[in-house]
Length: 359
Ligand SMILES: [Mg+2]
Image 1: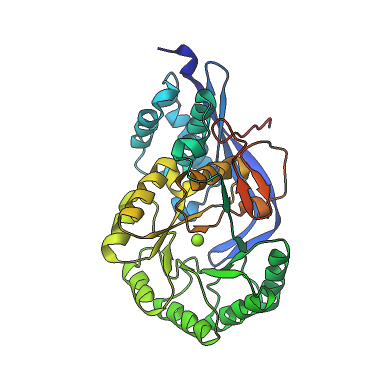
Image 2: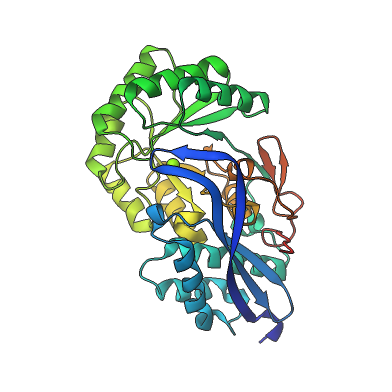
């Protein structure tokens, strides 16, 4: 036994970030990111950092429940050997029926501590397939003029892929996407309705955009998350690949998407499924020949770093939507990754996510 490898403590505290601009999607508006910082300390002084950007609407966890979950799990984690991270996290995950979003912060912090202790980056731990990934940039709901102006700005900043939030009305969204195409003629365009359409509306939007000569790379979560038949209806008629986001939180959800033919692509988020759930869902999707996207909530670089390492390490995500760092005002935190325009690199990271946060 190596007593230096034991978990000495795990804590959770509120951490707040300001947004550069309000972020508006079909399910609501956000003016700040009110997140939770999770810290795991080892007996040798190594500190692992995790973060949860709670989305009660998506995963059921608020900031308060996230902090309570970490406190509840503390006795299961303290005194355990970090080198057995898979069984440690398996035990803490099994202690909860739900709260997978809250648990994701524990998983990130435990794996960051393990990687720092072992001297291996999470990218390398997950397979080391790539050292860098390129993200898209997401545009909020707004008028066609506002959306077009935001697209021109993103293209000017070097983004080559633009994700447009839709789910207003078919007429308005058609005009908005045409405005994006005109403002950023060379950018790839994907759409995310966040469950905002009926199946028929989603198909109608896709058909109108096709008539306008606009190619859409992906239509994300067109209809309600539990409407598997509706997802399939859109998939069979819209002529564009359909992605399941809110529909898939757990591996069981992913299996149901496969069985019911409900999507072409699954959008994996560490904030929804944790790192272990993300690995399971990625395996299911790849086995079923579905495509993979990786997304994020409103996490700062502390939490986002884990998703960047997962995307690089597995190297199998054809759609990468890890843009929360561009939406938040900058704050003082080193490590995690380096950024060059839309490209994240983890080449310099030698342990865990490499996040160094003094608080
Ligand atoms: Mg989405």
